[in-house]
Length: 196
Image 1 (cartoon, one colour):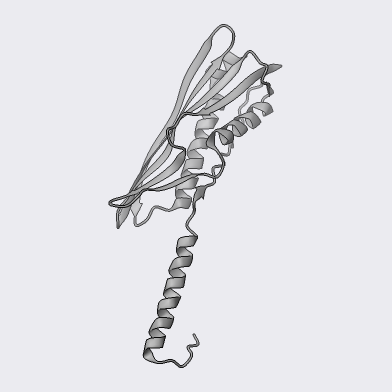
Image 2 (spheres, helix red, strand yellow):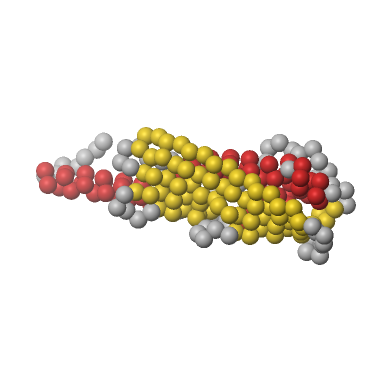
């Protein structure tokens, strides 16, 4: 590394400036949002014949963040999804159900309501380690003019590790859990039979 000829004080200031710039650029690259993009990998072997439903997804959480990082004596770090979670769930389920022959219209007597009750990863961060608790809980109500079917779907997990929790890993884990939960809804025999 080339260093111009400087006196001792100037060299110290030069290195202090370099360190400060490095720290500032590291802070500015911290993520502010998560990319939530569930992937449904295993197709459901079910086909709806000439069935139409109305789909509504409602977020009933008191707070719409997905990750909360808690540190002692510090304000919590909160990360939300780039796109609203109810829109992501609605788009994913609509795409998969359309592949199975289900049509969506606002005029249908049959209605599918998805209620987001919980969707959060809580991280307890200490100086040398972290532990996480995550839970996603969705309630599905399928109704027609005569009756209503209600099912709950949930998934929980815990993990721990040394040093800092990695946001990219938390994002990946949330996407995997949400994908599994939505796959369970799509594969639900109760829901399939009720709609048919």
